[in-house]
Image (tube, rainbow, N blue to C red; front, side, top):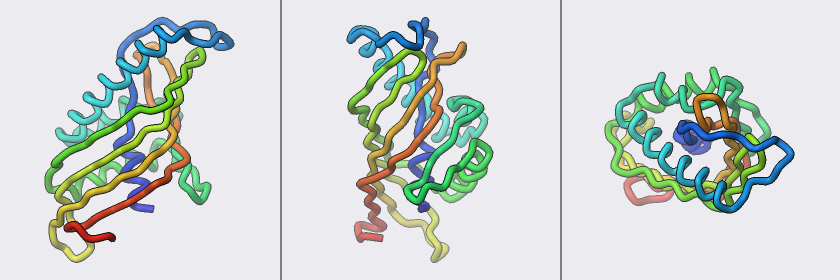
Length: 171
């Protein structure tokens, strides 16, 4: 569950401005390519916000109704995710790397959906009170909504393929 929440806390979306096609209209391949570039650029902004430990900047990348759904069906609203993000940041000694791979991006109207694979490496405080090398992987579905401020993360669900190593050993 903790791994799931770490991945949710790090998920992000594009904040650049773009005009929206009508909701019922599919988006062209060139438009989808543009949205992909915007979302990839935004992952860079999200990384900067996490590195700066700027919770306000992190949450500004999500819609007001942002939520996540855990594998057991629990829905975590924006306030719960903000609270979790604060706790996560308090346990990070330093980030080593954050890699995100956007796969299967589909854009329809004001929504963009993708499968995102994540690989995160950090030095983090563990329950034994010591800082350890922690490496995690997962895939998840992410849905973004186009807003007047640009693309923002709206929903995360279907987290799968989770794996965690602590000091090189399965956790």
